[in-house]
Length: 338
Image (cartoon, one colour):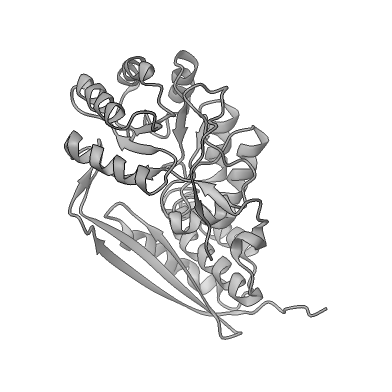
């Protein structure tokens, strides 16, 4: 039996890039996005291989994330490749400036690179290193489309359905809530029977969210995502107790401790950790374990090129219908490719 000796990290290259959106500016209740900023790291090891990782922003603060990565780099040079050990070392190193947010964005880029380097070193796909449980995962089509006309959104949803996605996620948050309802009804009429998810992007206060949930309830949505500001755990719990439509969140929840608080308080039905924000693959899989312990499913959010592969290693990766107690029986899948 041949045992592969883990290499030593010799140097790390850091690049900050601004990528314009190819179809022009996008928006939702709280964002107007023209570009995505990405912090990219290339970790060079003593075995001659290079692991690449990155973190993303919604158009700003990429330089801030990169500045923190620069602070971390000298502390990991000369260390043996071990993603979990390196994650723990760096988290302790930067924890005093914050346990979540910019810190976990910075850790995400490095951690993804470590796992990429480990995959290349062992010549085994990441999903198999983590423990593959499936070859296909359920995915939904998603877009930032609040600025679009309802006809444009309908065309978008039709294209997603034609590509074989499970469901469609569209934005809500018009100044007049009745306009949101009208748009959603037109989409459902145009694509009958196709499951629909909506995303409020933290744009409502509690009374607004409660009214929206009541008005949306006849639509039998799969879930409503981020109805309240993401740090309002108590508000999400109250909303969930007083309404019937499931709640999804995680895009703006940044570490294992925060996710554990949400999950244990009974404030969410679907967990959407964002791979580029939660600290990378290491913390993502820890969040998935806590979710599974509470019988909650993980669902995709952004960076699908990587997160779809990770979900192939997550036992509880299913989507449920508008009734929390009834699993959706109809799935669409996209093949996981290395």
